[in-house]
Amino acid sequence: MTKIPAIRSSDRQLFDQIKSLLLRADWQFESVGEQPIVSVEIPWEAPVSVEQLLKHGEDDWRLIWKTKTSPDTYVGVGVCCILDWDQLKSIEIPKSVRAYGGIRFPSASQHDEKWDQIENQFVIPELEWKIRDSQVSLTVRQVRKDSSAEDMMDSLSTKLSALLGHPIYPREFEKLTVNDLTPYPDKLEWIKRVETALTEIQSGKLSKIVLSRFVDIKSDKDIDPISVVTKICALSEQSYVFGLFLPNGLSFVSRSPERLLAWSDSWVALDAIAGTRKRWQVPGADFAGSAELKSSVKDQNEHEFVTKFVEAYLSEFCSHYKMTKNAEILKLKNVQHMRSSYEGQLDPKASPLHLLEKLNPTPAVGGLPRNEALSRIPEIESFNRGLFSGAVGCLSGNSGDFAIGIRSALISGKTLRCFAGAGIVQGSDPDLEWTETEIKMKNFLDLFPEPEISL
Image (cartoon, rainbow, N blue to C red; front, side, top):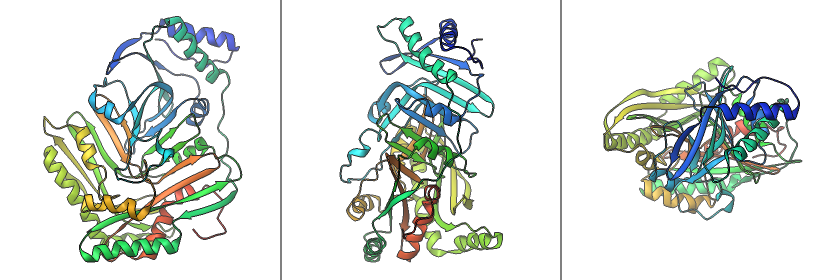
């Protein structure tokens, strides 16, 4: 079997050896829509790290994906092809091909050009590593072009020999200096916005609305998004890792605990998460926080808004379904939530992609009544959420797994913009909701020295 070796030799020798291996490999022929694709999967014996792979592709699209239920991490470098969401829904993808990307939060918010190249875009990578502990495989994909196989092998061999011959070893993460930290909105404006939402809830126009905010952190030098995603990958919690890194320097990173929808053939699974308390280092205090969350009428109502919404769509799309977790406490690094989980079997004529669109967004990040909440969110927030609280994930011909794009940040140059939201229902307190969003941002805020100014 062809293997990428663990060797150190001259650049030319390494290039020639890799090219010889690729020419002897058992290439497969597939199609993505009308695009003819050639691919090969090769065991990878060389030492490897996620950071090393991602930092070698700085001039290419790069991505990382890890579900919360599997030990596998996927890393992609380069582009075989890019499809927008509408294209992806209308074509067949082979079972062996994975497309990674995100669907924007669907509200009529003002245009923000920062999101143009990243939202509703799905990448099938040219080089895709699957990493499980010490077992690593590489899948190579190329669109079949008029150019010769020799040219294609030369291009691939150049990339792989550069990676193997000049490895980038992981470095200890250094906290960056904060030059400026700007919350949007500030706390006084946040309180006004929450009070506006509470007035509309009191009048009966809304039952729930999720309001969000962001903090722009400006550093003294460019923020390395690969170091950021490597750091949040190391968090010990049951959550997804999603990172999409563009050649223009823009990156979106998420460490979301919430599954929007996963499917394999006709089987589907999803979460309903709502209700939050902070974590405490003292076990007794942490347990008391869990008990308070479980007994809170306000949080029970907020959680039930999400479960009823989810159950309505499962009833529509599934022949049968069941609740597998009922308002259990999910403990993360900085917060704990109430989580309910579901599994079901799709009706034979139902499409998981259609169900995914219907679920995006759930009341966990939108509100109820849905249309009224989605109309009011951009009016109150005054910014474009983009992929934040949208759907981020991966799909193939017969399976997929998407998280809600929360606990996320947009990184560009010297600025990291981290997002968080809070569900506003009857009984919400603006000050407490501000504190909740602050705690939800800690995955990213903790990467920087303690700010001297209030968020």
